[in-house]
View 1 (cartoon, helix red, strand yellow):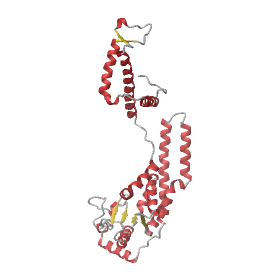
View 2: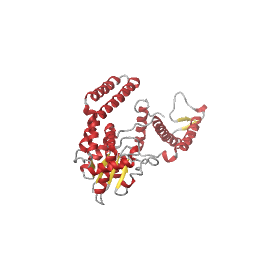
View 3: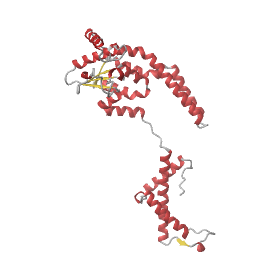
Length: 343
């Protein structure tokens, strides 16, 4: 059975304000389309949403334009001189579209509006209005605060009717961001006010103050798919991570070359000679100074202690090629030319 979901107007407006909430709207659209969620939409919510559309679109537009001004300032200050003109031109084009094209900001608003109108809106009955009056006289939440809470009280009483009419095997949920009027004022604001607790008895009814948390509980996998599709981007590595990886690869390449030389020494292909017997002119590739060789052996021991013998090979030709390629790529990122593999 589909879960019956009543969502406060403030939640819909907050979702519409933030372009990054597209995954949330996408999940709701999928769940409604698949018949897993049945939206319960009071006429009051529809009216409030429609009344606030222009204001929310304008607020979102101003917020985006302010954001782009900050981005332009950053590009002006830190951007590469050659790429700066094209970057600024692109930003100006987006800023212009935001300013003149309401659809650029109002797309989410339109999607939410279509969701709300999929089923006939519910009008408050005389019985609901009577209970609202009684709630006000008794000063029960949401009338526990010194404010006009008629709209909030209507939502409470209409939700009570939704829960009452739902079959035993059908779950209901109420989502609001208005924790001051609906939540526990003295304790955990994620729980309903003491005057409303009886409406949210598990497992038939649940109280939520976040649409994302509701969807995580109800359809975490679907939310993850939508979030990945919209928000995924390759996150750049921190400089410290790059430096640490480059250092490890440098030690691995050096150590492998050291063992090639050690093999040549052990087989007599290269001779370890004292200073007085070392030929500097002409240079001889079959000789190595004893002092240099001693330093190389000490460096190899430090490398083993630092990196760990398990990270120092041996490697086959493919693995060795990958290690050299990684070192070349990281050094290119850090400013060297391609194929810089000196150790």
